[in-house]
Amino acid sequence: MQHVNHPPGHCQCGRSVDFERAVGSGTHREVACVCRRRHDVAFGASGWTSVAELTPELSVPLSGFSAQLRHADDAERFWFPFALQGGVALPVHILISPSAKIAEVKAADLKVFRIEAVGLPTDARRRWIAWWQERRPASRSRGPSPIVPSRLGRWPAPALGRRPAAFPVR
Ligand SMILES: [Zn+2]
Image 1: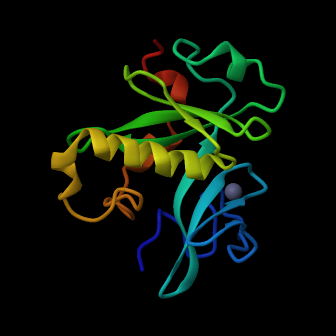
Image 2: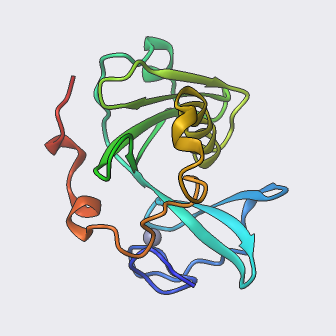
């Protein structure tokens, strides 16, 4: 089984993560590592495994996000790489207030996508991807579900380590 640049049961930071102790229910669950990365955990042939990681970030590009969320006391920020088109992964930013159960997701120069009744950032990621797929029906038939990145295991390592600030902020 392929994993994202790190062995099964481990976070990108190298720590082992107990993927069975996830929050959520059903087929989608989330685990937080000590390093604050969030793992989207799914049950597969080899048990619970991480299918995607969200990396915490200190700030997001402010334009587009609502003042309500930016000023929420419990606002949390994450980003994940996603190939909007072609093979180049761009950072997608998530701003979420777990108490308000509202998230806003923004990729590149797209309009912010607002999600309600969402408590977990990994769930916000899945719902944003579903929305994106809905907008682009042609991409739906292309290979496996984008929930599990198709380039799993051969992501360009520098992209993961690159600071979000290096991307155009607008
Ligand atoms: Zn970690």
